[in-house]
Image 1 (tube, rainbow, N blue to C red):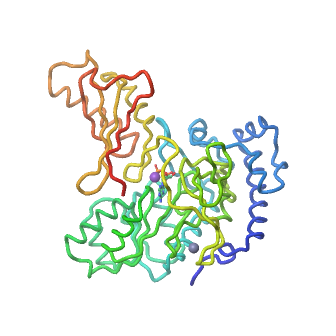
Image 2 (tube, rainbow, N blue to C red):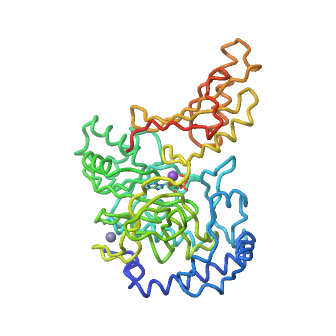
Image 3 (cartoon, rainbow, N blue to C red):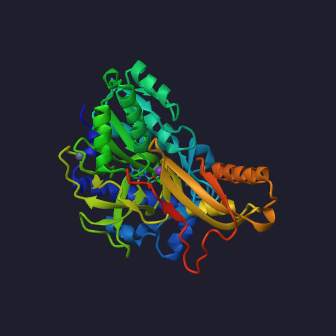
Length: 433
Ligand code: ADP
Ligand code: K
Ligand code: ZN
């Protein structure tokens, strides 16, 4: 089977635009009628959903940012009563609290079908055995992929993260044909497989890699090491999770599902860029019920590609993600904002509010984050064990907010340079993957 939902995947452009317009009107009406935040934004601009008469009218609508989710934490942007929400997920917020997203039963089904489209697009079907080697739980990558695999009818192996030896054993024993993980973990797995010299015992054909940016040289490395085709999977929690945009077998840009999302790629002045140009990806959901998002600024920089593709799909297409428009860091696929770290540190008494963040890649090619903080004068007792307990305290607080382990390095007060301008706090020493 070539397409999962051929009607939508290959819909003619004018028909698709009509569908988008109808769905945009519905989404705007739901946001306006059910979400106080949107109602106020529309009113401030002097517009109502009735002002949307063509797709170009999207430009009349207000933009939404990640901080808007924080300000309405946890459920303030939901457009349906709580009883209609069947699941929530959470991703990193810009400060102390995570960003919470919600789904109705229809949303979950839409998402599963979107994933099944992606899998069909890269040549998978019910005969495949699919190992999902990402974090389950509040992150969207686990259950998001999982439901898609089941929707496709393939066999899901919900291996989660960690224990590389076990991961490889499962690949061998279960005859795994497809895997999903971050590209950096993929590289580590590949290296381990090479060291064990067992590539002949694997049945892998397809790898789906996402949650962090990666390059075409990493693609080649992964494809060579595993003897697979490696595909880029893009998504973000605010738009559902993974699977919003996905590469097809042409491996030349990602299809972004136009029946579910209205795509804008905007320059710094908020103007739509021309084909081939770079800009920030701004998305409007067209079918999301629990959490409609209007002109959501993803912060991700991409290029707009022409929508014709040799695979026959008519959706919008974007290039791989080229970077971020803001200061968000991606560490092992998990988003980290310097403001989150600052938020933790200012609450701890024994240290000053100066800090530096160092990012490195360890020998297993995995990201390491180190936060350098200053011990406050009065807090130094002269006892090494007290230093160690302060360090552990800071590590623990960071872990609970960031969801990943950060190394903490304590230094003497005054070590971190003070600036009068904008402090340089982040030192990213990782080579690109
Ligand atoms: P978290 O990972 O903290 O749960 P999200 O799932 O919302 O949060 O992360 C979404 C972000 O991850 C995107 O906005 C983008 O910056 C990054 N991302 C996801 N997939 C890719 C990809 N394939 N290439 C580059 N960046 C990606
Ligand atoms: K991410
Ligand atoms: Zn294609």
